[in-house]
Image (cartoon, rainbow, N blue to C red):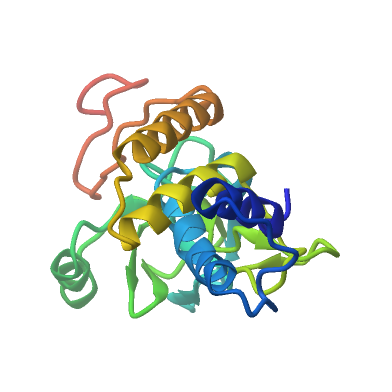
Length: 230
């Protein structure tokens, strides 16, 4: 569904009028809705780890480089995700819980069971020690829009842009947010939106795999599948 289709429906339901364009319009309501559409869409995208926005990025290490840029469209890590060692299905990278923990390992030279650990600092993925193989992780893209030609975008700029997620959610979100801005009663409209959002999130969720944090230091023995103390 195009963003204009969502905006047109929202305008009709809030003001009872019909518009023919939004992002090039001179109509005040249309312009307000067009501006609000980006905010509503961003909130929807950030409120759930949508499969349609999930991508996998792979970093190739050389044993020397420790800092790697985030993907250009990176928004955030997938919740409860991990950085995996592509060469070894069993091991993954230990997530440093704080900058201080990362500094303690880097400055103190403490050992970590291979392949090592990671953290995001200064907009980059920092690894310790430097990865020698490929590391892969799932992330959520910030490009929740696309142009008529299918080019991913981080915001709507034209009427024929499309919302990557459900267009009905965008319409319902626009209705209650616009009413809230105008000081109108929006409680029922917000409840309708939230119910629709919950249903889409439940439908999108799919199966989840419970994974425990894989924290390993060099001096810690591994239990399963080996005997304790091995």
